Length: 92
Image 1 (cartoon, rainbow, N blue to C red):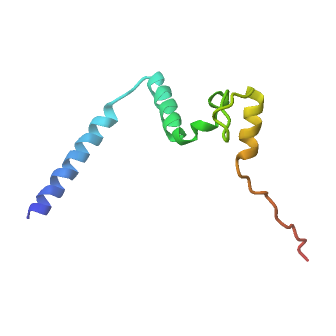
Image 2 (image 1 turned 90 degrees about the vertical axis):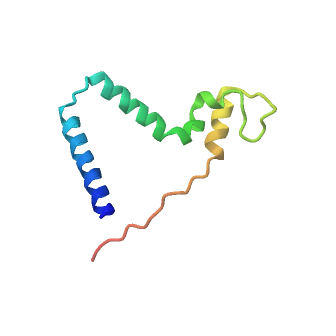
Image 3 (image 1 turned 60 degrees about the horizontal axis):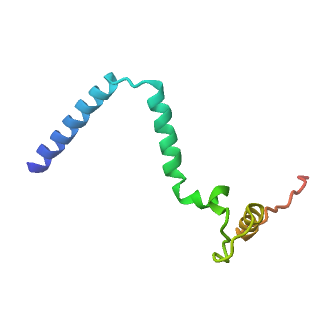
């Protein structure tokens, strides 16, 4: 009986929340800021790839300052990349 009562209360709460959310209207800047926030949060683990994070730092040698263009080239060459290759065959 307690499970049925808990399920009823949860479903009732969700339906009331849905009805309230349908009437809610937000201005466009809120959606733009929300989208920007989601983009930043979803790419948070990739922030080390930005060029401005690499200026003055070397991935292998943190003690020696280097030029920005050299650090970007080092970062590109140090990332492991698999070659893309496949065979195209003619159909008979």
